[in-house]
Amino acid sequence: MKKKCLLMVGLLAGINLCVAPLLLPAAASELPEPAWKAATQYVVGDAVADFKLKNVDGKMVSMKDFESAKGFVIVFTSNHCPFSKSYEDRIIDIDRKFAPQGYPVIAINPNDPEAYEEDSFINMQARAREKGYPYPYLTDNTQAVSKSFGALRTPHAFVLKKEQGKIIVHYIGAIDDNPQDPANVTKHYVADAVNNLILNKPVVTPTTKAVGCAIKWKT
Image 1 (cartoon, rainbow, N blue to C red):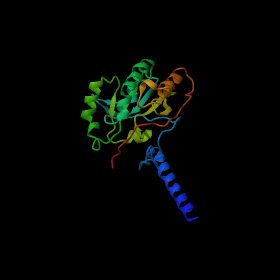
Image 2 (image 1 turned 45 degrees about the horizontal axis):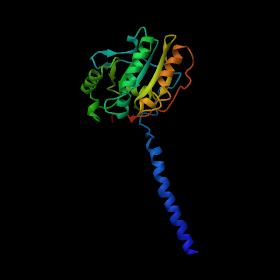
Image 3 (image 1 turned 60 degrees about the vertical axis):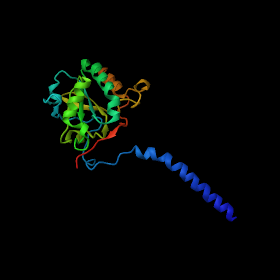
Image 4 (image 1 turned 90 degrees about the horizontal axis):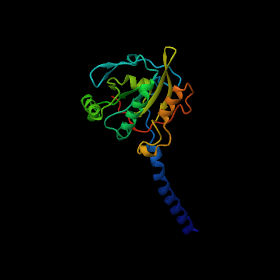
């Protein structure tokens, strides 16, 4: 009887050892709640307040500057994040496709440059020149805009539409369903949302979970 008990203990210990590592990736994918999370942030259906942030060309940019725009694709992104780098060409393609149809991209870097030197304004300028960004790449020094949107990762996308003098949120989340391999994307969340809005249809998938690097907030 004693041998059977010892055998059962051994088996249970073995099961725990096998199961625990499987749970780690799921737990690791969850971000801790930032200190500001209790504050109000935008959800689908909210009206967005305009902002004014410095572009890599040194000029201040706001949504008001885009008088002919029908809406916007706001992407919180960064220089250092591997996920942002993976999406870089896709973001450029989104702007080239949809800006002529009234939905330009505005990219915003929310990260604290003291935490990531690669995200400094000078390095943002260098990256924008190197890649030939066709859209503004803004720095959010105070992080107030990023917090108001509720951005948590880079990249984190928001699709907005102008409606009766307001700018309304219609989509929040990931750009598509494959951060690492653009050739194997099966769901183009941002592109589908913009296409729905262009056709005056409701967005079929209004929210998804953004996948990327956690934003580094100032302390």
